[in-house]
Image 1 (tube, rainbow, N blue to C red):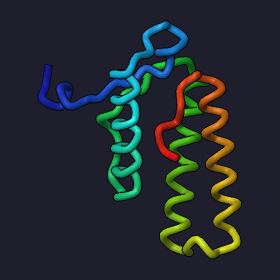
Image 2 (cartoon, helix red, strand yellow):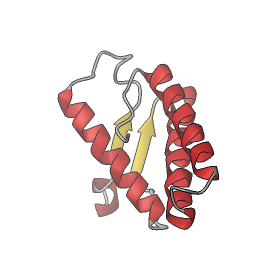
Image 3 (tube, rainbow, N blue to C red):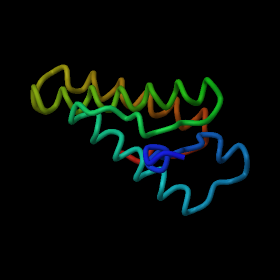
Image 4 (cartoon, helix red, strand yellow):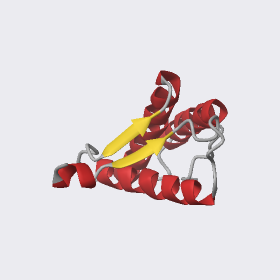
Length: 110
C-alpha cells in the first residue's frame, strides 16, 4: 500500500440504506463534504476522495456538490445582491433536496 492510498478518504452514500448511519459517520461526512468543497473552490482536485454508493447516489452527491460550488463562486464573483444569486441558490437547494431524498442523509452545508 502506497502513502497515497493511506490518504484516501472513503464515504459510503448508502450508509443509511445499509443501517450503518451513526453520529460518527455524520460527523465524518460533514467534514469530508466541507473539505471537498474547500478544495474545489481553491481549484484543487479531490482525487483523495472515494465515493461509494449506487450510481444514482453518486450522481446526486456530485450534483449537490457541484451546485454548491457554483453558488458560492457566483456569490464571490457577483455578490448576494445580484439577481442571479437566488437562481443559483434555488438550483443548489434542489440538488441538495434530491440528494437527501435519495440517500436519506442530511446535506451538511446550509
